[in-house]
Image (tube, rainbow, N blue to C red; front, side, top):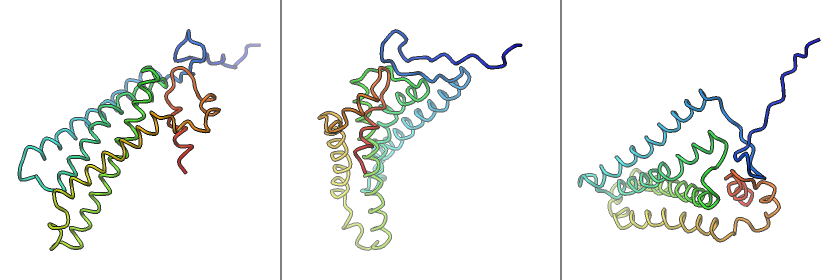
Length: 202
Protein backbone atom coordinates (compact mmCIF):
# COMPACT_ATOMS: atom_id res chain seq x y z
CA UNK A 1 0.00 0.00 0.00
CA UNK A 2 1.31 3.42 -0.95
CA UNK A 3 1.55 6.17 1.60
CA UNK A 4 -0.27 9.46 0.98
CA UNK A 5 1.79 11.41 3.51
CA UNK A 6 4.01 14.11 2.05
CA UNK A 7 7.72 14.13 2.88
CA UNK A 8 8.71 16.43 5.75
CA UNK A 9 9.77 19.91 4.74
CA UNK A 10 13.50 20.52 4.78
CA UNK A 11 14.55 23.37 7.02
CA UNK A 12 16.43 26.17 5.33
CA UNK A 13 18.83 28.44 7.18
CA UNK A 14 19.99 31.98 6.53
CA UNK A 15 23.60 30.76 6.53
CA UNK A 16 23.78 27.08 5.69
CA UNK A 17 27.39 26.59 6.82
CA UNK A 18 27.23 28.62 10.04
CA UNK A 19 26.32 27.14 13.40
CA UNK A 20 23.48 28.94 15.16
CA UNK A 21 22.01 30.33 11.95
CA UNK A 22 18.41 31.54 11.96
CA UNK A 23 15.79 29.41 10.23
CA UNK A 24 14.74 30.84 6.87
CA UNK A 25 11.09 30.93 5.80
CA UNK A 26 11.28 31.34 2.03
CA UNK A 27 8.51 32.59 -0.25
CA UNK A 28 7.90 31.14 -3.68
CA UNK A 29 9.71 32.95 -6.53
CA UNK A 30 6.47 34.47 -7.80
CA UNK A 31 5.50 35.78 -4.38
CA UNK A 32 8.96 37.25 -3.86
CA UNK A 33 8.76 39.17 -7.14
CA UNK A 34 5.36 40.60 -6.20
CA UNK A 35 6.46 41.53 -2.68
CA UNK A 36 9.69 43.15 -3.85
CA UNK A 37 7.68 45.09 -6.43
CA UNK A 38 5.10 46.34 -3.92
CA UNK A 39 7.60 47.19 -1.16
CA UNK A 40 10.03 48.68 -3.67
CA UNK A 41 7.38 51.01 -5.09
CA UNK A 42 6.46 52.06 -1.55
CA UNK A 43 10.08 52.89 -0.72
CA UNK A 44 10.56 54.86 -3.95
CA UNK A 45 7.35 56.84 -3.35
CA UNK A 46 8.42 57.57 0.22
CA UNK A 47 11.80 58.89 -0.93
CA UNK A 48 10.80 60.94 -3.95
CA UNK A 49 7.42 62.06 -2.62
CA UNK A 50 8.90 63.53 0.54
CA UNK A 51 11.86 64.93 -1.39
CA UNK A 52 9.40 66.77 -3.64
CA UNK A 53 7.63 68.23 -0.60
CA UNK A 54 10.92 69.47 0.89
CA UNK A 55 12.14 71.01 -2.37
CA UNK A 56 8.79 72.71 -3.02
CA UNK A 57 8.59 74.33 0.40
CA UNK A 58 12.22 75.42 0.49
CA UNK A 59 12.29 76.69 -3.10
CA UNK A 60 9.09 78.75 -3.26
CA UNK A 61 9.19 81.74 -0.92
CA UNK A 62 5.40 81.99 -0.81
CA UNK A 63 5.40 78.64 0.98
CA UNK A 64 7.76 79.85 3.70
CA UNK A 65 5.54 79.76 6.79
CA UNK A 66 5.93 78.26 10.28
CA UNK A 67 3.48 75.47 9.49
CA UNK A 68 5.09 74.60 6.17
CA UNK A 69 8.54 74.50 7.78
CA UNK A 70 7.17 71.89 10.18
CA UNK A 71 5.72 69.97 7.23
CA UNK A 72 9.06 70.11 5.41
CA UNK A 73 10.83 68.80 8.50
CA UNK A 74 8.26 66.00 8.79
CA UNK A 75 8.89 65.15 5.14
CA UNK A 76 12.62 65.03 5.91
CA UNK A 77 12.06 62.49 8.69
CA UNK A 78 9.88 60.35 6.41
CA UNK A 79 12.45 60.72 3.63
CA UNK A 80 15.13 59.21 5.86
CA UNK A 81 12.77 56.38 6.77
CA UNK A 82 12.47 55.64 3.06
CA UNK A 83 16.25 55.78 2.58
CA UNK A 84 17.70 54.10 5.67
CA UNK A 85 14.91 51.87 6.96
CA UNK A 86 12.45 50.68 4.32
CA UNK A 87 14.85 49.03 1.80
CA UNK A 88 16.59 46.92 4.43
CA UNK A 89 13.35 46.08 6.24
CA UNK A 90 11.97 44.99 2.87
CA UNK A 91 14.81 42.49 2.39
CA UNK A 92 14.49 41.23 5.97
CA UNK A 93 10.72 40.76 5.66
CA UNK A 94 10.83 38.94 2.33
CA UNK A 95 13.97 36.87 2.87
CA UNK A 96 13.20 36.37 6.61
CA UNK A 97 16.93 36.88 7.20
CA UNK A 98 19.25 39.78 7.97
CA UNK A 99 22.31 39.80 5.70
CA UNK A 100 23.79 43.18 6.64
CA UNK A 101 25.66 42.38 9.84
CA UNK A 102 25.07 42.96 13.54
CA UNK A 103 26.52 46.49 13.61
CA UNK A 104 24.29 47.68 10.79
CA UNK A 105 21.36 45.94 12.48
CA UNK A 106 21.88 48.20 15.50
CA UNK A 107 22.24 51.28 13.29
CA UNK A 108 19.18 50.34 11.23
CA UNK A 109 17.02 49.78 14.32
CA UNK A 110 18.28 53.03 15.85
CA UNK A 111 17.31 54.92 12.68
CA UNK A 112 13.93 53.20 12.59
CA UNK A 113 13.08 54.27 16.13
CA UNK A 114 14.55 57.77 15.81
CA UNK A 115 12.88 58.74 12.53
CA UNK A 116 9.51 57.21 13.42
CA UNK A 117 9.48 59.00 16.78
CA UNK A 118 10.55 62.18 15.03
CA UNK A 119 7.57 61.86 12.69
CA UNK A 120 5.26 61.45 15.69
CA UNK A 121 6.68 64.57 17.36
CA UNK A 122 6.20 66.54 14.14
CA UNK A 123 2.60 65.38 13.82
CA UNK A 124 1.90 66.40 17.41
CA UNK A 125 3.32 69.89 16.87
CA UNK A 126 1.45 70.28 13.58
CA UNK A 127 -1.78 69.31 15.38
CA UNK A 128 -1.12 71.92 18.06
CA UNK A 129 -0.37 74.50 15.37
CA UNK A 130 -3.63 73.77 13.54
CA UNK A 131 -5.60 73.79 16.79
CA UNK A 132 -4.33 77.26 17.68
CA UNK A 133 -4.96 78.49 14.13
CA UNK A 134 -8.60 77.35 14.27
CA UNK A 135 -9.49 78.28 17.85
CA UNK A 136 -7.61 81.59 18.06
CA UNK A 137 -6.99 82.82 14.49
CA UNK A 138 -6.54 86.49 15.39
CA UNK A 139 -3.54 85.98 17.65
CA UNK A 140 -2.23 82.85 15.89
CA UNK A 141 0.39 84.75 13.83
CA UNK A 142 1.92 86.14 17.03
CA UNK A 143 1.80 82.83 18.91
CA UNK A 144 3.20 80.45 16.31
CA UNK A 145 6.10 82.29 14.72
CA UNK A 146 9.05 81.02 12.71
CA UNK A 147 11.17 80.92 15.87
CA UNK A 148 8.53 78.82 17.65
CA UNK A 149 8.41 76.53 14.64
CA UNK A 150 12.21 76.22 14.80
CA UNK A 151 12.03 75.23 18.47
CA UNK A 152 9.41 72.59 17.66
CA UNK A 153 11.56 71.23 14.82
CA UNK A 154 14.62 71.10 17.07
CA UNK A 155 12.72 69.18 19.75
CA UNK A 156 11.29 66.81 17.12
CA UNK A 157 14.79 65.88 16.00
CA UNK A 158 16.98 66.13 19.11
CA UNK A 159 14.85 64.12 21.54
CA UNK A 160 14.28 61.07 19.28
CA UNK A 161 17.92 60.99 18.15
CA UNK A 162 19.26 61.25 21.70
CA UNK A 163 16.77 58.68 22.98
CA UNK A 164 17.39 56.09 20.27
CA UNK A 165 21.15 56.61 20.41
CA UNK A 166 21.17 56.20 24.19
CA UNK A 167 18.99 53.10 24.06
CA UNK A 168 20.82 51.22 21.32
CA UNK A 169 24.43 52.36 21.75
CA UNK A 170 24.83 52.37 25.53
CA UNK A 171 23.41 48.90 26.23
CA UNK A 172 20.57 50.26 28.36
CA UNK A 173 18.04 48.14 26.47
CA UNK A 174 19.98 44.99 27.44
CA UNK A 175 19.88 45.43 31.22
CA UNK A 176 18.11 42.50 32.86
CA UNK A 177 17.31 40.83 29.52
CA UNK A 178 20.48 38.87 28.92
CA UNK A 179 18.69 35.49 29.00
CA UNK A 180 16.08 36.68 26.52
CA UNK A 181 18.82 38.03 24.28
CA UNK A 182 20.69 34.73 24.39
CA UNK A 183 17.55 32.73 23.61
CA UNK A 184 16.57 34.88 20.64
CA UNK A 185 20.03 35.48 19.23
CA UNK A 186 20.89 33.68 15.99
CA UNK A 187 23.07 34.44 12.99
CA UNK A 188 21.03 36.18 10.32
CA UNK A 189 18.49 37.81 12.60
CA UNK A 190 17.82 41.44 13.50
CA UNK A 191 14.74 41.14 15.65
CA UNK A 192 16.40 40.94 19.06
CA UNK A 193 16.71 44.67 19.66
CA UNK A 194 13.07 45.29 18.78
CA UNK A 195 11.86 42.50 21.06
CA UNK A 196 13.99 43.70 23.97
CA UNK A 197 12.91 47.29 23.52
CA UNK A 198 9.22 46.32 23.48
CA UNK A 199 9.76 44.23 26.58
CA UNK A 200 11.01 47.32 28.42
CA UNK A 201 8.23 49.66 27.28
CA UNK A 202 4.93 49.23 29.21
